[in-house]
Image 1 (cartoon, rainbow, N blue to C red):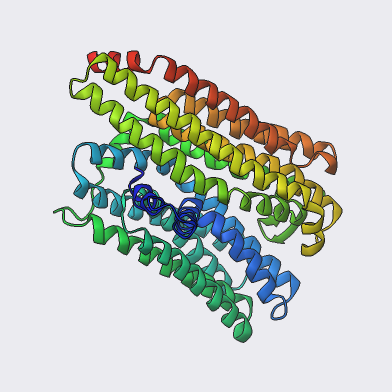
Image 2 (image 1 turned 180 degrees about the horizontal axis):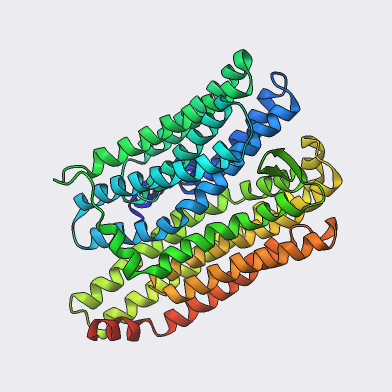
Length: 458
């Protein structure tokens, strides 16, 4: 599923700073995904909209966007890993044309689910004018559809088209939100931002259609069979995304500093800004992971199975496994080194960053703590991806469950304490989940040949 990564990787072949910079820039944009880029958009729009609409309207705008992304990630989480596995199985079966029909069916299913969930949260539980409610529901539906499309981007080769889609969609959204706010206030700002997401969805789906069309079917619901075959994958996707957001949701509801923005929509302004800034710090690590770890490991992984499936000697198989382990170690080491430099730099200059952004002492403290949590989160994501390559679905499920339940329980405990402990629940949960996933990876690799041949014999 790292096809687009292999295309970007070619930029690194002629060793030049220009090619390297371009490769990591493309990888950072694609691998970070819409939910990381949306954080930049929210921060940018808060600054742009400050002279145009009131503080309460800006808070309403950012809270709606945040809730739309949070609910969309959790709603589509159960689909995420199942769709990835289905697409990978279609590629293994040399049925590339069977991927797009499953995408269309998944989009139809997601559209109905998101309309229902969005109608309840933003239509019934948010007492705002009709225009605001319709804009919020539209944004939520478009974001959910974008997340479904994002699951298939790995099979594409036209990375420039994907990056153009992200850049164009968010540029249109921010520009339309700003222009709408200058004329008609928060309602038009929300509608403009939703319109940008519609542009992004159309461009991403268009990229998928150009490369994957050609089959006879318009939509195929055969991917639903993978829910029965791999129920753990659906639960993994739900728990992983719920784990990322559960601490924010708890702070929205139980923090002493939480505010009721509109109906069921709440915010915890001190915690929200701090952890969103921390999550931005993983963009360099995501780029390294996408180019160095997942791509290199995927290539070695494929060569290992070529040796086992095409009658390679024991020496060939052991050599391919050694290459696979070496690629994992070197890629993980580079990921750790790059992300450690970024995290340490932000920790050292955290006070200056806080002063520049005008955030208070409590927010600055939470920012420093959650920077460590973001560092551990990217390492956990790397190990989780390797577990899926090694087909250790039980290990992945345990890791995701520990992350979600640990983040929920520990974050709630910190809320019962005081501000000095805010963010530590996220840090500890991500760290424990990462160590469990790493232990499972090591255990799986130790007897990987045996497992492969035992599965084949069964």
